[in-house]
Image (cartoon, rainbow, N blue to C red; front, side):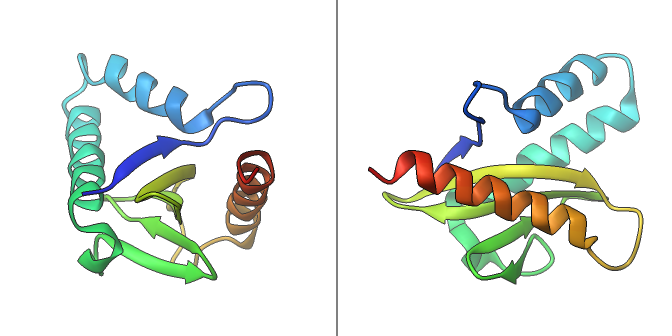
Length: 120
């Protein structure tokens, strides 16, 4: 069993946490968003239970320590951190076949920031 943490920047802001809170609010009024939210949290639950061993189509290795969770057209970047923890870094909505380099770069920057601030 793994734990899940959200990436927070040095100012305490987490885009992914805000995104999940926004989904929760909007899911009350929209069936489509409710399905999306339920799928995201089902995938996170599977990640907590099985880790990256669950494989495609739920998770995909991107590069180095970076992975992506793949619920519907959402993509959530994460990495494994010590003590059986995964850190959810960044999300985007998939619109093209190939993962945009800018999204990978942003996730890698967040990962490096997390590691610098938390590897004491």
